[in-house]
Image 1 (cartoon, helix red, strand yellow):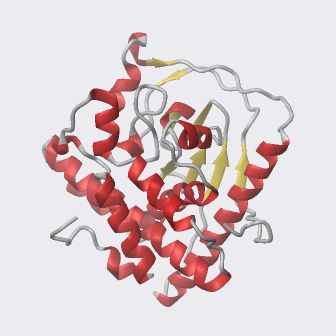
Image 2 (cartoon, one colour; image 1 turned 60 degrees about the vertical axis):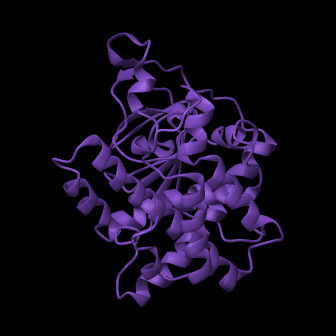
Length: 287
């Protein structure tokens, strides 16, 4: 991905090095997390209660964040994230103007270990996430090591896809989609609510594809192999693949983010069309 000459965002909030006491409670909202206790819940479609197993009284433990100087690699990754966020800003500002709307740029919070958001208290084990309560994306950059090594999805564009997906949730919030989904889930069974969550997450994947489409057309950011990196990441975090790795079996009715095939399909849809209207997963007969 061609990013080094890109504009840096002014909406980065760096909380690394901040020390926070342990608190109870789980994050409310979607994000990109993993499975097998070290990367759980929101984004990957795993029951968040798994995080509490073995922790007395639902207490989430935390260790103080390090205040050590950043390494050269960490500094470069911080620059990369800032450029990607700026690129999403440039893309969605233009697209919102075409819809006769004003785009409210989200903040991106960098943290280490744990963080407090308007949606609650979260550990880095829960992965990157978006909080609609404060319109902020949260990410512990150590997640990218897990994306590369645990999930075998390396590459800078795979990393950019993660951010673009979370910004996709911000778009859903601004367009009123997230609130409609929240209200629609009331009174539904767990299986029905999960099915609605799948459609919301797949739409965020599609919106990430739209960003990639416009960013490349406007600023020529894509290099050979970049799209494959994003598709590999989408494949790696499908509910079916993660469940198979974690428990050895696949339970479709418990999906909350969609299968690998579905995630790839909807990212491709946004990438190919570049049109927000193409991302209406809620009315799609085939996901």
